[in-house]
Image (tube, rainbow, N blue to C red; front, side):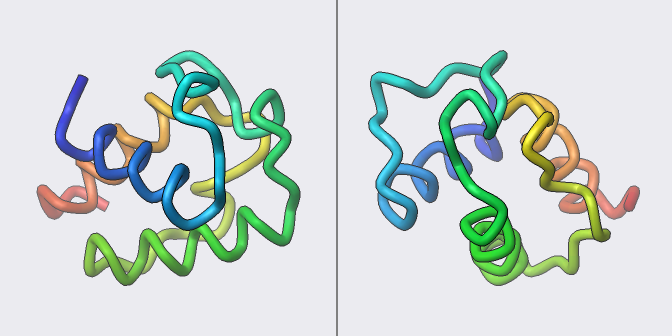
Length: 80
């Protein structure tokens, strides 16, 4: 995958306690059983880690991890 994806997975496992064996690019946060409060926390973590301000809804329960990684890459490349 990408550097953004790897960083996202690392943050999910280290900060939210998601088991690394449960993570895959095509899995959603809902399938990982990440609740709404944890998604807000993750959004804040991603903002700080990537030095961006994600739009509301960028990280949703129905988004696949690969989709969020792609969004992060767009922000990093200045195409928000």
